[in-house]
Image 1 (cartoon, helix red, strand yellow):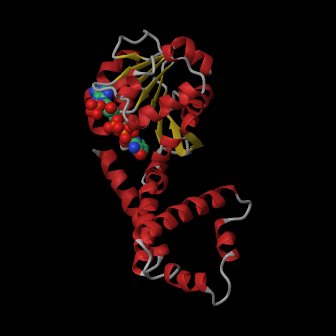
Image 2 (cartoon, protein in one colour):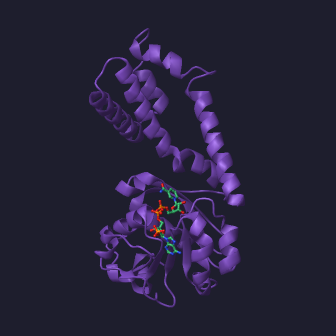
Image 3 (cartoon, helix red, strand yellow):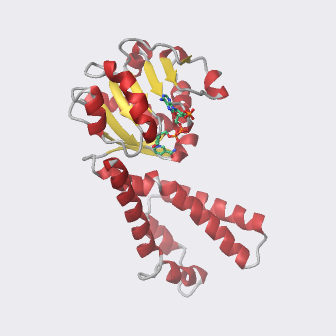
Length: 271
Ligand SMILES: NC(=O)c1ccc[n+]([C@@H]2O[C@H](COP(=O)([O-])OP(=O)(O)OC[C@H]3O[C@@H](n4cnc5c(N)ncnc54)[C@H](OP(=O)(O)O)[C@@H]3O)[C@@H](O)[C@H]2O)c1
């Protein structure tokens, strides 16, 4: 079971908003024919309509994959229409936050291969990271296919247990927003030190993007990279004494923030 299987049997995409469109762009770029994709969406964007995919048409009886990319609150309305595809060879991949595998099993049947995943917004530029976990009916070939499809928008990682997805949501799912806020506050702090707003924002964006790329590509750990740029009694050390403060710096703040997101993810899964 591979991308040729998807090309011949077809892929159904339920919900083609921001995430669905990002994935579809990756699949088309990767060579999946537009004629193999069936999109279900009440209001497909102009971009979706221009791709040559099937839109709101009856999908083939036995598609290789159904990718579920509707908002969690639309799930109850959208999923029952697909119940007939459960219990067969069709692999279901969900990217919906907060919808547990058990919910899909209730609607589709527990013998349905179901992969639950958690992507993040840099998927929009192919730089996302998606964590995956399959149910008991998911075999090695299903996982490999899910990885192949989700790697169209960035890196993938496999989880050991579904329960880990709440912490993943707290770190990488919601994490881009923490970094956006870091950029905002770094720029505002630069302004407070007398820089023009535009210049401070340009410095903050480039610093976060550049440091992120360096941390990802370097052989050294982020901790070592930090030490490398911290001269004794220098400017960086002065700032890090504030940021690394165990009582009020990044360590307690991020721990609390990630815990809050993880707790909220658990609450949402319980419905
Ligand atoms: N964005 C992220 O960073 C992120 C990260 C991790 C997980 N996710 C998950 O990804 C999923 C999609 O998020 P998104 O940001 O792409 O949302 P989105 O842009 O709102 O896309 C959802 C799409 O589904 C369509 N839709 C609504 N009801 C439908 C139905 N009954 N049948 C078929 N399509 C339907 C919506 O159409 P209308 O606009 O007309 O309602 C919309 O085009 C969510 O479950 C979210 O939890 C998103």
